[in-house]
Image (cartoon, rainbow, N blue to C red; front, side, top):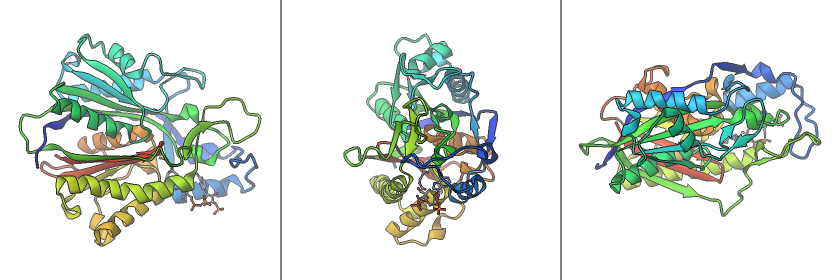
Length: 356
Ligand SMILES: CC(C)(COP(=O)(O)OP(=O)(O)OC[C@H]1O[C@@H](n2cnc3c(N)ncnc32)[C@H](O)[C@@H]1OP(=O)(O)O)[C@@H](O)C(=O)NCCC(=O)NCCS
């Protein structure tokens, strides 16, 4: 294995505001054609929990923008890396909609979030670039891949990559799928490594925008007459079909490039969309390799139960929690091989093989 960039530090912030499933007990739910869902809410919530595994999720308070959580997270990652912000050669922020405007459901992408982060961190190094990645849930992983490519080209030494999601401001209170999404932020510093034994080994990215690109989209509320046209929606069944088909394939592509067998992987950090989908991805991955499903027993950590689907923030948050020994008994030991893989709006999916 050869590599030349490592994750030097990580950070994450989990918003304090807990939203249990009971929060949605009195919501009126409608389907996408605008017809009221007759099932009683207790049954809807039970179904939600049984499909997704989600018991609660976290939201950023309505009177805050997205900058604070992104800045706090990034400071943790830069400190963990033992760096000063002015040592950064680049800042990449992956997100879905820009900066949320306090007390409203509006969001802004000008200036871009990486510029706002650079400003908030007081990074005065004018050679440190600052740009955003819009790539749905796989955006943070794609940012890490771009940081790695930049380092390989000799254009940077330390690159901060943040994954920010404040989905709570885009949720349609009348769509059951809105209960899946949540807020959070995770970040890491990708740095040029001095040795070649650890770090990013290989990666793969697939994009299927040429197919149905309205599987995950922003649109009007499911309830007719409700104001606004920027509510987050998905065609859940199509998301499920896409993810269970393509995520195992993109993982295999990345592992093949690294010449690493599935049995050599110690831990899988998967995008946490829902528990049922995670199981199906693992099952299909086992099938592709012709190995028993229990090959992955104890190797797939999960945060979905208590964090929900935090989209682009999911993998960096999970990685940080594990590195800080805050996620159950999961630990990452030196020399262990991990696969990080994500999937989301576009549709896109990606995978990265990383040796710690
Ligand atoms: C939810 C999902 C498993 C259902 O797919 P499916 O098996 O094809 O079946 P349906 O769409 O008919 O839904 C099955 C049942 O679950 C219910 N359901 C679907 N989504 C739900 C939700 N978010 N909350 C509560 N109930 C839900 C349906 O109402 C239906 O109930 P019924 O059996 O009483 O009629 C599938 O759409 C899924 O996992 N989608 C992925 C969504 C996701 O995680 N997106 C993240 C994007 S990164």
